Image (tube, rainbow, N blue to C red):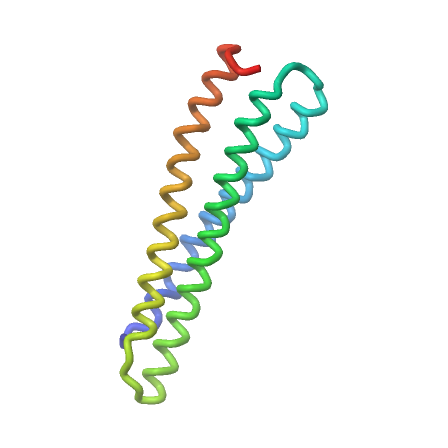
Amino acid sequence: MNEWYIPITILPGICLLILSTSNIMIDLSREVRILIQENKNTSKLIERKLKQLKLINRAMALLYLAVGGFVISGLLSGVSDNVGMHNNAGLYVLFIGMALAMLALISLIFYSFKAVRLRQDQYMGSCG
């Protein structure tokens, strides 16, 4: 893979996803803490929000693994090009990183749909 810089150029986009996802995770954790402190009959709502938190956490882990895959891919490709070795290890690791990033995006899409449903239920009063 002569284009060793390609996986590195993807990193800023993935890092923006990590940043926004971590902000969502912080807000969700704050919401759960407030609900627990209110001590109202919100156990069902808290349970659903904790499931959301687990989904966000899984997406974050996948994004971190994808970043690692992209960095390793770029390094493997760059080193093998400079040394004169022609193997496809960097390309394989790039594909693994892309697959992990796609899994993270799918998790975030599921989170988005569930978040809207949870908010609708929360504001309509059917949770808790």
